[in-house]
Image 1: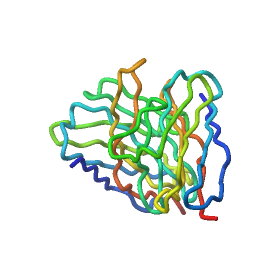
Image 2 (image 1 turned 45 degrees about the vertical axis):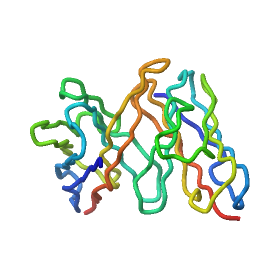
Image 3 (image 1 turned 30 degrees about the horizontal axis):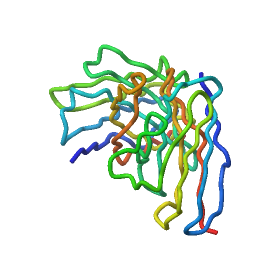
Length: 124
Length: 107
């Protein structure tokens, strides 16, 4: 069974830093790209960042570019999100998600497994 | 960035009803469109990928259609476990963007 378990959330003051972790099990972690998706309280889903299978390619939402850094350690089956210069608007539940692809009529990415999330609260 | 717009934002329906949710992209995204279901306090769950492919384990009363910029998620006969919020997502061009969600409530 695929499992993704996030950790590292908490309450932090504006301008502070936090590092989120996500450990995967039940699948070959280094076969998959991974993403972070967040959800502010009572709001919808927002893709934050993604990384390919070997860490060689990364992407970020404009809202976090230059402040957040995604990385992975395949030896530890782990995904990370280093969050610096945190703002109140970064307050959200952060999910890690596994990316899979289908190659029918294109290379189409989708998020087929999700963790339960870790809550980040940025407040003074 | 590609903007995804869902309609309606919410709907009330009864068990057994046929329900249709629409998702429109701000530009053509071919069939690079996924649908997710989210229940309160739970993580999103993949329902449909590549516009019309049913994820393993998802009941066949759910279906997806569309291509280009207009897409539809249909529930042929609404069941109690289908009351949830539904999101579309495009993975045609980064950043991968989601619709604002459609909340399906009990009438």
